[in-house]
Amino acid sequence: MSAKPPKSVTHCVSAQLGKDPGYGAVIPPLYLSSTYKFNGLDQMGPYDYGRGGNPNRDALAETIATLEGGAGGVVTASGMAAIDLVLNLIKADQLVIAPHDAYGGTHRLLNSRQAQGRLRVLFIDQNDPAAVAAALAAKPALFFIETPSNPLMRLVDIKALSIAAKNAGALVVCDNTFLSPARQTPLALGADIVVHSTTKFLNGHSDVVGGIAIAKEAELAEKLCWWANCIGVTGAPFDSYLTLRGLRTLHARLDIQEANALAIARFLQQHPQVSRVYYPGLPEDPGYALAKAQQSGPGAILSFDLASDRDGVGRFVAGTQLFQLAESLGGTESLICHPASMTHRAMDEEARQKAGIGDSLLRLSVGLECAEDQIAELETLLAAL
Ligand SMILES: Cc1ncc(COP(=O)(O)O)c(C=O)c1O
Image (cartoon, rainbow, N blue to C red; front, side):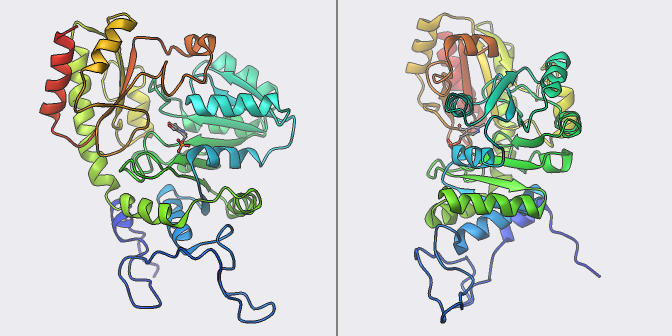
């Protein structure tokens, strides 16, 4: 009789424990060595050189791949490295379809690779059936999804898009950074590859920059590992060690952060100084029904438009104390970000306008502080506007 697979919470807490062959350490030891001894000619051990393989990196990759329901994956030096790694699976001049409101760095990467002649890219509104149909008629090699999107929290239907894109012959890649496998598992919904910025919720402590690409099928996972070694984008052992440590508490963190985010979204929604809240946990949000169907929670990121001009936004963020004015998200601490001038400044004005990222938009990464304290700070700042 095969054992029942552990639940995601249990897996985060207990994966990789007690496997140390040297001293029986419960927590996997840190292997910093860049090179490993051969036992003789053609007698390599499990590892030879740190760029291609490392026990800490492999432990993290295996743990997250299991959480995502993938056959395997490769830990990279950043989320962008994971996305760029995946682009090696397509040939020059092939077409990539990407969301028009993707993370600014993804937008910049795809545009820059296109400018080099490395690929072609078409940014579309993936919620527009006519735009999706036209894009698929152009026979893309890769269909890139980011849901919820950064920073507008727009959701797309992973299952429906995966079926359509695969029928058109495309590889489906989904960026699951905003939710983590604790809230959404795109491979189960039809994606071929999941990418993450592990810098965010997976590590969860804003002290590591990292990424991962996970494939549903072993053959694809092997290709990703091959390319990661070939181009040298694999993550550092210590970063992997820290990320696995952070991952232990993923569910506990997200449960609290999500409850705080919902309380903040409800508060902002009724405030006269706020013109719109973007959070799929609110019944009024256009993504609410889809979030209920494909996610196991709305997550801990939300955005909102202030009913104010750029000067007002500047005054608002200048007064924050709990909410640090900073890029990134998914850590234990609350952050506030002005996407137009920070995370999405690499997008030109026209692309930002098209995506709906205006000057009054602010994004919150809701942390573990008391919701009462978080709301009190926002209330004071809104009252001062
Ligand atoms: C959705 C999303 N994908 C990818 C990235 C890139 O990750 P990294 O900063 O780790 O390179 C980010 C960074 O903010 C992101 O928000």
